[in-house]
Image 1 (cartoon, rainbow, N blue to C red):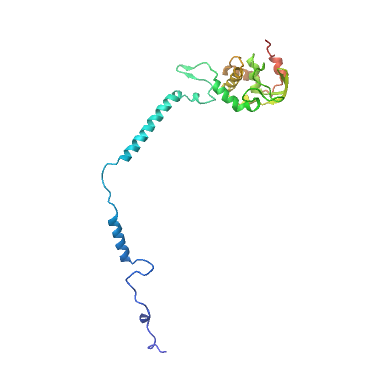
Image 2 (image 1 turned 90 degrees about the horizontal axis):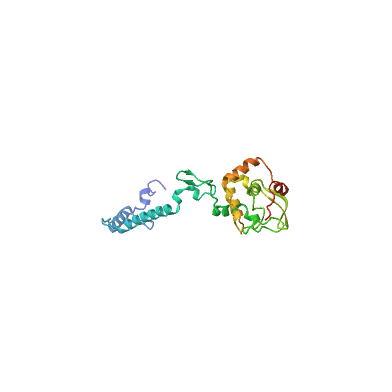
Length: 229
């Protein structure tokens, strides 16, 4: 076949159609649909809307309530009201005498002592002696302070029962006020009637002890014999 007998490319190409095929809209049809959607869209309107005003009033009311609540319950925003480590309460004219807090003392006791001596103060037979009604926690406060700060290891006897255990030196890592809170709580809980312990007394005993390992029961009793009624 010569060149004159071959159909040219123009004869073999199908004509382009201006209409959209099955694959989508034509450009003209897309413009038409877009214009129709723009006409159907609602125009923004001016006017008063109540919802934003209500939301603003709610936020303002919540802020007022929060400020009133904090003012009434934050003890004049004194951090010592919430801090178990706070050594002293502050008066208007400066520090005042330390006052042991039984609530703080109970919390500190539960955190540091209750796992052995129990929250009831009854201890565990043969291992951890009771604190309720114990002569070891009554009388001379120096004895108990030393045991809390230095720890106690060895066999001891409480109300005719023997206990073989070891008390860690929990007070070594506590502040003087914390030790005072614990000691006061133990000396006045579960029917105990011993006097309170101050942070100044704890500081005095801690300084006198210096670096000291665990006490033995004999060493403690030699320095501070149990009081007899």
